[in-house]
Amino acid sequence: GRSSSRSRNDGKDDKSKRQFRVGELVRTELGRMIHSGVIKGNSPILLESELRQRISIVSVDISPDLRQARVSFSVHSDSRNYYENDPVVDKRRAFSWLVDNTNPIRHTLAQKMSHMKVSPSLTFVQVDIAAAVDVMYLIDKVSKGYQREEIGEWDYGEDDGEDEDDDDWDEMDDDF
Image (cartoon, rainbow, N blue to C red; front, side, top):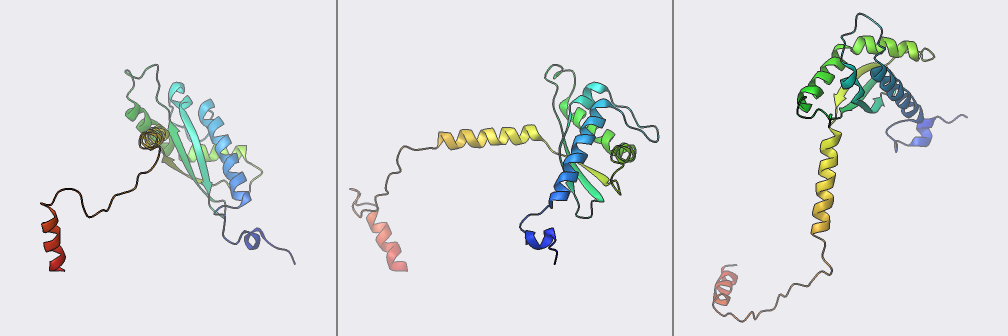
């Protein structure tokens, strides 16, 4: 008989090939829509183009039935206007804009992906890529800083040249 992808998969991969392909398609289309600002529907709330251009769709995780999508996005800080625009405020405004426009975005996505039976409902999750990069940099820096040429052996010898502390250890041994 026919074997399904589940039987070959044996649960080793969390996502099927179809989930991955649909997720990548949704990610690409969402990125284009957000950057172009072409979102149809019930009078979408506007967000300035400069901030829309800094929104990156990092990944899209699709449920097995392809009806739900968790969209991970990041907002890059604007190095040119760093002191004029607060990056935290920009991230909140972008997140708020995406959440407030979820239905118009989904409607536009459904029109772009008309070959699909259903358009997935969207849930937006903000990820901070810059913080992750900073952490990776620090981990790398620490690991390079603590590398040793050779690892020395510990000397567990009985005689360290000082007799004063030896009695303390002998008394502790008697207690056990």
